Image (tube, rainbow, N blue to C red; front, side, top):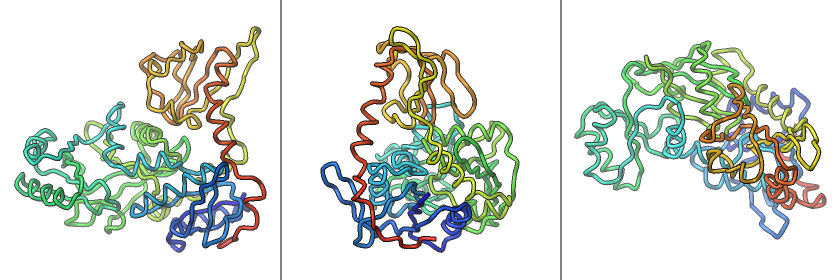
Length: 401
């Protein structure tokens, strides 16, 4: 395969390891600076130029998009998707996880532990919101922060109010979050790839620091996740729609609480603490999806009268994500849903109020025409957007190995 890694830091540990893992398995790799792309938009010919030359053909892209360039980085990634290139994490899923408010809103809809959180804009609402999350001390989070930047511990109501008002005046949006004292200075990072947790570690902040980010000097140790924590990490990644995710969780007496779902997790601390080849697991997952892709519609059995049994893959049908079966109304299309397969098992005869998640597979019985129509528009759109063969040849091969 030809694999592109979108990264502004080709010498960073994670980018280096991904490249080594891919070349070690016989793939050709390009490390591409995300900001050096030009997006070309023409009728039926979506394309990309890299360093002023039309980009050659790629089979897959691994996005390592920094928080500071999210808008342009996602635009580039969307263009790859329009061109029919497989992406390890898709643009919609990254956008969900990067917006801290949107992410926690999505998680709050499901049976997932999260710290009590408030979001306000009016100064009169600040103190009541602090008290609703359990009172001071509280954690204040800037929505656009990363690696612990923009995370503040406020010890008093007056301090919290002053900080929030100051940040609001600077046009910053702030989350007010319960400070879980029993987990002060430590958390768990679970690395999810596909439908499994490949590695996990505990991060412990250095003395005097409440943030447990590795970039802030935290110590790390390998851990075997209890089943409840593993299920929570997998479910949180699936709710975001991410195939590669770092899920940060607090250890509490009430069970795991998800702090964040990171779409571009670093591997250095995790690989050093566990000795597990995380980068290799990412490449293996790409191989499974590109070299042996799962079909969006797989007919299992052809029945008389135009009826059949088929499997629908939700990750190729984003319009279904985060809607209940009642809202989707498959019955109105003369389709019966028999089961939902997701990371933690199979739901047989699911309730009409069950919510569809990005990684679900739906086993359905119904009219073949209706089953095809469910995904027909999406298939036509992707085929229409694929570039003509002559448009993607002869591109620059910067960083090939």
